[in-house]
Amino acid sequence: MTELKEMARLLRRDVLEMVMDIKDGHLGPSFSSMEILTALYFGGVLNLDPDNPDWEDRDRFVLSKGHACPALYAALIRTGVIPETEKFTLRYLNSRLQGHPDMYKTPGVEATTGPLGNGLAMAVGMAKGLKILKKSSRVYALTGDGELQEGIIWEALTAASRHSLDNLCILIDHNRRQSGGLISDVGGSMPIREKLEAFQISCLECDGHDFSDLLRALKDAESSGKPTAVICHTVKGKGIDFMEDENSWHKRVPTAEEFEAGMKQLEGVTV
Ligand SMILES: [Mg+2]
Image (tube, rainbow, N blue to C red; front, side, top):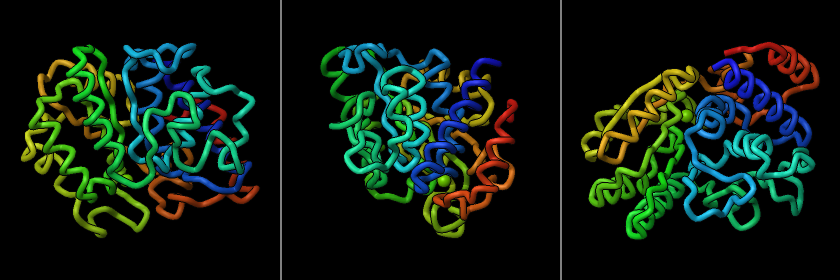
């Protein structure tokens, strides 16, 4: 657990540096998902071969909330799938690290996402395809809680349930906020658990910043026998106190002073 906390701290520093370099990118949604991504990539959940990102028996991870890709890129750099030399190319012209993930450009990216909801639908297709091929690989998709307002999410869940995709795990970054404000004010997502269960999706909940709770839920999801959603309770902007639960940090660039203050807070283990 200490190693995972240390990794999440390093990844948050990476993301802050990358966004500061290009002066663009989504810090708040990246930071709320950081422990989820760390658990998947460094907690022994995803079965991957960093030397062969296209290995056919790998597990699949789809970042359906594609705007949080600085966090995904940082994880892929630290797993060795993307070279460290590309760290400071986020959102550069012709870079492989675009502002939303591109499966045709970037190693380790399983689906091109950004239009919200589409990633989950693609993950459902992958899970069905793996079933047809009789593969034991699992598919993980990370969605935002505001993203659940998209109609395609519910079409995808209908198909996941219809096809009994017990190899699909939907992680919901439930930070209670979206670009426009609180999800309860913008409308349409709540009550999340009741809606998912009405679509015959098995539901688990966890503290999305607590590694032991996250890993327990991810383990339980493997044996539920149904498509399973893990509702991860998180804090937008987690890790830097002046960003936490402050919606302007959905996509705001720090001043030089804010950058220094943020990096200083990330000098020690913060979670
Ligand atoms: Mg949200």
